[in-house]
Length: 537
Length: 76
Image (cartoon, rainbow over all chains, first blue to last red):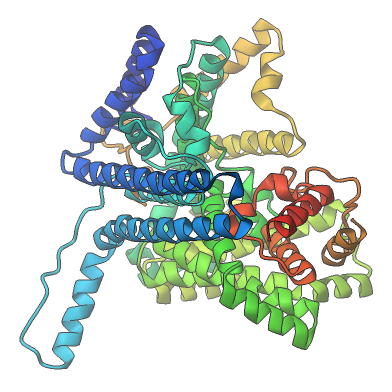
């Protein structure tokens, strides 16, 4: 059931009607039933995974809570005469046990994700090792189809376990409400990821029907449909053609590669952020506020800035649960301390700043898929970010020496174009049919330029499934995105601003957007709207 | 307070740490800065700041960081 299908919209409408009709104390149950119903529609076997993650994470959370409560009781039992040392020893012992439970449970839940995503790769690898030694054994290679949203509910569950382990919040007592946190249907397909003390608590609370939530939510859904149906699905054929094995096997120019990666950049942004808008809009209609996942990523002035604006919930997860723990772990701080003493404060900063991005981006690479292309892309991003941190003092000195006005608008444009170029390289690495093709395409993009192609003089630009009229729709669509992006960058809250307008202007804008989606959206019997790019992760 | 301000300015000389009260909430400090600040505070005061203490409210202002350091010193 795709988010942009009539079935989903009808399902959502029905759920929202029931949600507000039942007594408020049962609202969570309506959402849980709807979530399991939605999840069952993706395949009955998938339910096993989500049930396992739910029961396991719930049980472990309760266990950690029990250990913490027991520790508190021990401290209480000591009374006022307890010394600081005694209290600290009890806390230390409790933390140790909690840590063990936390790590073991997280490893089991993560183990399922790794097993599902990598069992075929491990089996093939093992078989090659057996072959090398001429052993007559083999492991069956089974390609397990990952259930929908596996990465998302795994990461949310692990985040919950770490937070409970750290004592950030208490473990949820109600298994039904916890099950809803793991399976909330609007966010199961492609996130955003969220924390229990933020969204989990909202899911279990009663919500009253509010005009603002319904209208703002509906607007966000419409905006998401505009991005997905009018832009992403329209340009999909361009990237699909140019990054196909047949196309790359032939004679192609660097300009065609640039055209392909340009189309793909807009496709993936509109597809993913459009999907997130639909998710957030659906949740808002139920009075639930999900975290923002995108903040105009094309306005980023560096790759680090881009990753702060793109898939922000994954970035926040990685920062909290991977980046900080690595940066603050004893070996890294010891190396950093030694470097600071030996080579000065700058070196002390560089050592961990180089180490952590490599681990984070390696993991992000693997999260997308265990292929050399994703791993190389992860390392490419980490290299850029690490070197930026390491070379910032040099850049600043160079800028001063060359008297570059880093505050100027033109410098910002230069930074944005530089970031976009690096992003194009990153996209080609993962989208090309193979890593070798990717390198060849990147090289051609910079060396084989044919301006006539973009000027439309030879009509080549319209040979990739988007006609001249279709291209006009795409360009106008992107211009609308650009204007909205600029306004947001300037701090304008679009929906609030529109809501303040008179009824005629307001409804003209709503109906215009609806008309654009209905008239210019890509539909048709052969069209598979379910294929949200990030749904596969 | 002066010592903290000195540490913060050595890491990010472009920020007015005496005035800013939303260093994290407004995205003025990034994660690399936080790690550098934590490392410097640990070194200077001979304390251990754990991941649990990496909360925005502990790093939103110089005063909040001082309060964090003092609370750790008290506990230790």
